Image (cartoon, rainbow, N blue to C red; front, top):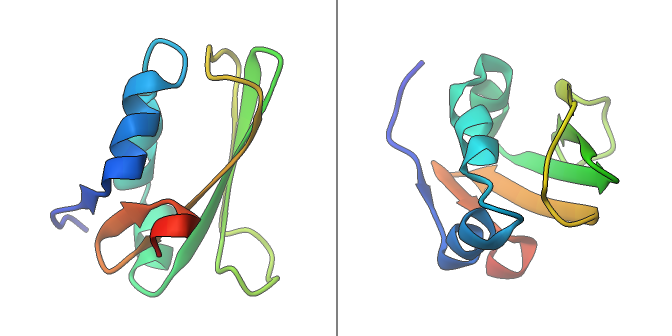
Length: 97
């Protein structure tokens, strides 16, 4: 499945400024089939960074089990829980929804 994806200014800011850049995160979102399938409706994405490791979790935002989880061994993203939405071929911050 391939289609053009766009992202908002807030997501662009995150990708440019999280550590030395987090475009790797956006690449994962637009290349993983399970994420793209969920995003045809609505995908709620959480990037949890603890120390230098991270976990990406994607679900439908309705409390159902995740459709995708991935552990990242190393990242220089700042610690915290970062949330994103992916719908209508657009990746956005919750405040931009």
